[in-house]
Length: 163
Image (tube, rainbow, N blue to C red; front, side, top):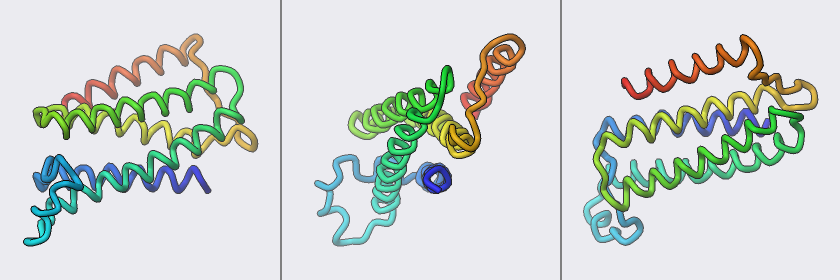
């Protein structure tokens, strides 16, 4: 159940983040909560869209940390790398998101922000499917599996950066 909730939160986060970007609501209030004078009055939906994205990200991140902790304890061998990588990418995502907001960096970085968010979503999906007990984590980088995994990564990064 924890895995499903985490995946659902990250799916909502990806959709919400695309809405924020599509509606040009990003950086509506970089110094939240200090911009309360810009929110009331008048009510600014773009500020609340951006703040909603940050709130969903915080809850999803907390769920991912709990899920990763449980999966790390349950996984064996190389599969233990999956929750560690998920938490590492989450930390990079938080830093990147904070840098984009605080430094008001160019919008092109939102593509990288989305790409890393999608990678976290895929890792959360993996951890939701393979619980390590009833369904052991199947993870191998040997032989043909490693080649196909590497090619999958290359295709993922090309398609994400091409977006």
